[in-house]
Structure formats: C-alpha cells, structure tokens
Image (cartoon, rainbow, N blue to C red; front, side, top):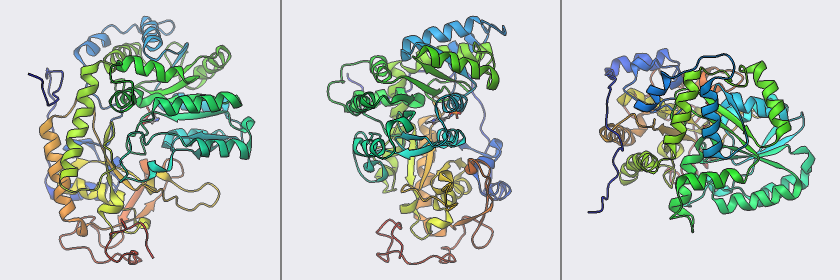
Length: 491
Ligand SMILES: *Cc1c(COP(=O)(O)O)cnc(C)c1O
C-alpha cells in the first residue's frame, strides 16, 4: 500500500521535559521581557517556535561523533572530515569553518565590499545586511515583486527579478557591485525557494558583467526539495544532486549550519577562488580562530559533518517539510492569513491581516507574537518592521511590505501533537484578535534592534486584554473601513 501521510523517519531515544505555565505567569514573564519574545527565559516557554536556528535534535550518530572530537588546536581530524563532506555535498573547493553563519558573512563582507559598494540580494536577511552595511556597502533588494505579496500562490517566490538586477548594474556600474548574494529558501519572504531556471539566468547575467555570486546556502537543502517538487524536469533527481547543481552556479557560499545542517552551533564559508580563500583564512584567524577550527570545537565540526550528510537524506527532508505543511494546512483550513504557499522552515502569519485594527507604527507582528505567548506558551518571532530596522539615511522606520509572525519549526524536535496544540492556539487567538493591543518602543538598540528591544503596550499594561481593545491611540480608519484591504492601506 502506498502511504499517504508522512511520518518521522526516527524514533525517540531520549526526552526533555517541557514546562507548563499559567496565564498569569506568562503575563508577568512577557512584561518582564519587555514584550520581546527574544528576552523570555526558555524555562517559561512551552512549545518553542522562536527559531529553527541551532534548535535541532541531533541523531545518535551525531552524538557518537561528539565523542570522537579531536581537540587539537591545529589540524584536527574532524576538520578534515568536515572538509571532505562539505566538498562532496556542496561541491566548493575551499572550506573555512566559522562559529556560525554571521561569522562567514562578516569575513565575506569585509573581504569583498568597499565603502560605497552595492550588494544586491533576493530580500534582505538581518545579519547579512548588517555585515554588508558595517563593511560600508548598501544592500539592494532585487527579489521579484511577487515575494512581497503574502497571498499570491507562486512556486518560486524567491526568484530574482532580472530587470531589477539589470537596472542596478546600469545605474551604479558593475565595478560597484562586488557580488550578488543569492539566498536559498528566502527566510524573510516566508521560506520561499528560488528556481534553478532563475539561478541559471542570473548566473549568465552576472558572468557577462564579471559579478560574482555567493549563495546564502543556509537553507539550500530545503530549497532543493522544493525544486524537486515544483520545477519541471527534476521530479526524478535526488536532493543531493539538485543541491550540487545549485552550488555549481555560484562562486562560493556562506552558511549557517544551525539550520539545514542539524547542529546546535556552527557555520562555514566556501569559496572556489584560491586567492580569496587565502584572504579568508587570514581573516578567520583574527576573528574566529585558526582556519582548521574557526571558533568551533573538534566535536562540533564532527557533529556538523555527520549532520550535513543526514540533511540531504530523502526521508529526512520529506518529513521535515511535511511537518511544516501539516501545521500550515491546519491554519489555512481555519482561515488564518498566512504566507502562501507554505514555506520550508516555518509558517509565517500575516499580522497585518490578522490584526487590521493595529497600525503598522504599533508593530502588529510584535504584538501578535507576544499575545500568542500569553495565550498558549508558544513562542514565535516578529518578522516585520521591528526586524527591518531604520533607513540609514533618514533614520525613519522601514515598513516592509510583509509584517509577519514566524512559527519556526526546529528540526526533529516536536511531534504532530505539538503541531495540533500550536494550531489550536493560533486559531483561538484569531477569534480574539480585537483583544490584542499595539506596542511602542521603550528601548531601541542601534544594531539588529529586534533581538534586544523592549516595548510597552500603547494603552494599559497588557498585550492581550479581556475585552476588545479600544481603538488604539493614533489609529485611523483603513481605506475600506472594514480591514478588507488587509489594514495596509490606511487613510
Ligand atoms: C540564520 C541565518 C543567517 C545567520 O546565521 P547565524 O548562524 O544565525 O549567524 C544568515 N542567513 C540566513 C538566511 C539565516 O537564516
């Protein structure tokens, strides 16, 4: 019999108890955390969907690998194992390990970007953009416009708009563009993939102008899965083969191994160019550690090598994305507005449509993440205006087209029953959406403000009140009068 449902391709060998809290405890906890889910203590969280970064459950083989750590300062066996695996799975010539993804981004940005340069990419990512700006560059979004429409069903919303890329090259000149950063399974767009067809066209255009391409390969395996599912001609190709083909269309990558690669810490930079590799090795010793450990213990590199091999196994990736789709479908069936189609690493709730009564200036996604925690103990994360930060020229808040709350699924950690509880909690909150109150900053850090910012409700002291919240101070009617515009077009 052909099985219709997915199931976890593993059984559980060790368990970690979860803590249950009362609503009163959660109200106190979120207030103490300045209405920022990043500042909650994890012991106060029931189901933790803050991020899929470093939160995976390792396999018995990875744990066994940890015992095989060769903690030599130089030339650890685990480094050579990792180098071999990365070479086989990703195909690049040189590996520079780093403590996590942003370590690789730092080195790449510092090596390649000069003040006044422009770095195009398919939608920004927080740490990537921060490092580009710290190196004196300016990020330019060249993702196709359809990525900004949460309701549009398109198989490859991560695709690059060649017209936008061409326009940038014409405007500033190729010499001012050190490289193009192509993010796989675009995080901030809702985990949406780029197609191989698009990547090939982009490669041809960049080659014509002598512009390098670096992948942000953090979720390249999940992207490869969507290519197999959705792109013509790949139904019979293995995930491993598709991944190699994606990487072959670039000059190197930065990667956070805390996502696809199933480890709790780690990352790497890969380059094909020998000179660039020398330069990167020179920098890694200054900022991370020797080039054969890059800020990691030998055991971490061993777990990463094994995790990378496991990440491209067919059963694993099918169940991984199957679980995300299971949760997403439950929310779609209940009418909850989420980014469509369902992405690879989480469900992105459209907070602007969920909370049409809260103006963008009062950070509806931040408020929704807090209210969900108070309601259920489920921890999610804001991916909207708070994450986007301020325009470096004007100092104004940036209001990206997408104002999202991300329910991110750690790999191999939670069960289908946890997904059911999560869906029930979100659906209950959706029925009570008018009881959620907007937020204002009380403390705003300069860099990556979403991590450590603190907020307060715009009225009262609670983010989820028992009666429908009064129209918040400063809110105006939306254009259609009933929130049917998604609350975006306020007049
Ligand atoms: C997580 C992430 C990074 C940064 O990696 P860290 O390991 O958190 O430093 C970069 N790009 C993308 C797309 C990510 O999701």
